[in-house]
Amino acid sequence: MRFSDLGLLPELISNAGYDAATPVQSEAIPAVLEGRDVLAGAQTGTGKTAAFTLPTLQRLVAERSTGQPRALILAPTRELAAQVSASVQKYGKGTQLRHVVIYGGVNFNGQLRQLQKGVDILIATPGRLLDHVNQRTIDLSQVKTLVLDEADRMLDMGFIGDIEKVIGLCAPTHQTLLFSATYNKQIKTLAGKYLSNPVEVAVARDNTVAAKVDQTFVHVDKDKKRALLSQFIGINNLHQVLVFTKTKFGADKLARALTDDGLPAVAMHGNKSQAQRTKALQKFKRGSARIMVATDVAARGLDIEKLPMVINFELPMVAEDYVHRIGRTGRAGEEGAAVSFVSACEHKLMRDIERLLKLTIEFDVADGFEPHVPFPSAKPKHKSKPKRHGGPRGQGAARSDQAPHKRTSHGKPNASGKRPSRPGQSVSSGGARDGSAPPKRRQSRSQGSRPAR
Image (cartoon, rainbow, N blue to C red):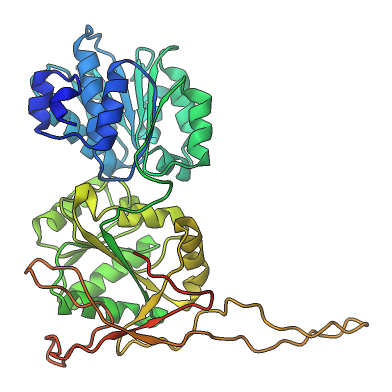
């Protein structure tokens, strides 16, 4: 559908600069303009922000400003709130509508001064918003459009109580727009409770990843991961790589180690101040830092144009976060690559991802980094019948069905136009690719094998 056919004002269409509408925009924008509640489940990078921002701006333009927020957009993280704010500023240029963004980690009084100047659209994270509510520095009673952006992430982060409190503070009859990267039972329960006869927009299947994201899983021992990561990034001359770790300490430690290896890296996590996080993101986007090492605080809300690759240095504790992490690449129709380093101790987390995505994963093995610790056997250990008087049970040896087989390697193009080698390809001691590039080996798990593509 052409963007000009959605019923938006010419100035908003001009500000957006789009010719064609994405599927979520085609379905959601007309519904929002009609005043309907919307329940939208769509993958990241599908144009969700424009889908709720543009029609909300149009509805506000037609009404008289009161100085108090008439539209509220809730986001789970500071980064996402800041990026939604940037979109509101871009799309709303020339409309005379005022918007304010508030989140933690920055001066409270500075935000208060902005609010006192009057606001039409408020973008906020739940915690800082309720701080202002408790201090009586903001009144939500005139909010007639409430947007819950990345609602599933807010539920994962434990914001359900805050969300319900905010909903109760809005105008008694208000429009609710619930946008979510995944469309699960929790989201449906929340929608059933607070949305009135919503228009349902389901662009993607539940818990899917973008079709153009090439997924690779590498079995490697835990203590060899850092060396493999440095070699993989260095050999392929990769730039703008987003690397995920589980902990804040681990992110800092890995960023320092990569920098020591001659691969400039920055860390992004919740213990960083907002100024530090903003500076790190700017360095990464400008290219002065080739690698950003982040915890799951960055799995949502980071909008980095044409991010080529995401690497899971450690698997997430929650399988759904795998979808969110690799959703940072392959956005808006672009191709992307996701590589996950998996050690034996992460086997259960890997099984959770398999169940979520409904696939059986094959594992690559990097030459020179063959794992010494096998995955636990998928089959139960054999046990002898227990003795009548409670004697110890006998145990058979755990089986390992990890017979590797050959597989020809292939990779995604890098910034230089060359295709990077996968982690399993051999390289010469001088750091350049070995001309023969022997194929890497792939391990298949005992329950069968099917590529994760």
